[in-house]
Image (cartoon, rainbow, N blue to C red; front, side, top):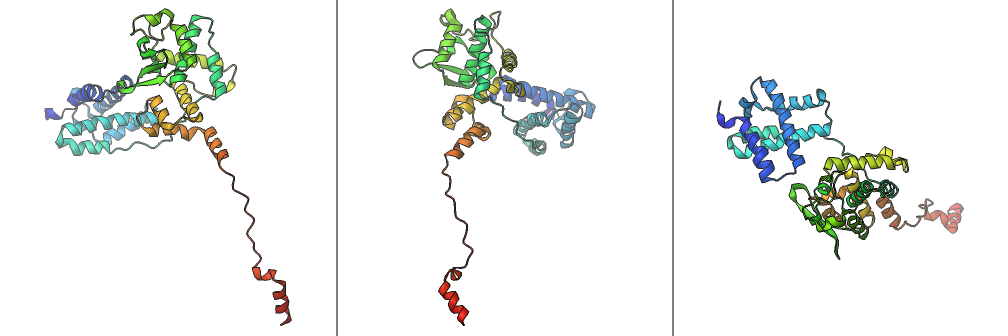
Length: 338
């Protein structure tokens, strides 16, 4: 067995050097790649009947990759989207292997040739104005926790921030001066600046109070013990508030309301307000404009307004079917006299 082609060292280098150091992918993506490869190695170990440390790159055949995908669907009950996510991680691993070892380029290309399964794009949930108003009205703002919940929900809607971005926001990221804004740190540690509405500034000032003069690294949103809210805590908070708001607006019961739903809501409402699609892309921190264009696809209200703004074509009279010569009575009389 050639030690240079053992799979283990390439897995380690891929996860530590490529995913973390070179590409600087988000922690969530790192964990997704790690979990996919861990499942795959467990499956390969059973198939090859060998110790994981002795698995080789050559033992990862197209047949075994397809068998792993079938195992995900049938034994683990994974949906197509999850299957594709696991396969994408394997593709990325073997793309890395092919670049590192020239003699394995062909083998790596065969593994990368296993196709993703086509699936309908997931529905993009967002809130209508009445649903958003009910959500913002749900927290009991006379209590400190309710004040924090309201400030967080308003912050998510104002900025379109992801849950992890809101959890990482610090006092030093806020600028509540003449041109109020917040610096958000998103995927790949990329940062962007989002403007803050005057009402958001007022609410944040009230929430933070003396903490605005404290250490800049202090978190903006904290739990009852003063520790930073995690993205999981933010998810729970939004879902709990949406369940309460559904009593006032029942349509919320039919929607899965999460921090990302508020992010989608921000984009759709900006689009309806006539904000340029490139500005929305920068606002949300999208790398590709194609991602932002999805909001234009789902917003039926904007499409209806565009249709109403179009000039209605004038009614076209029906095509005349009577031959012109039949209208000439003198000609008809002449022909009858022949």
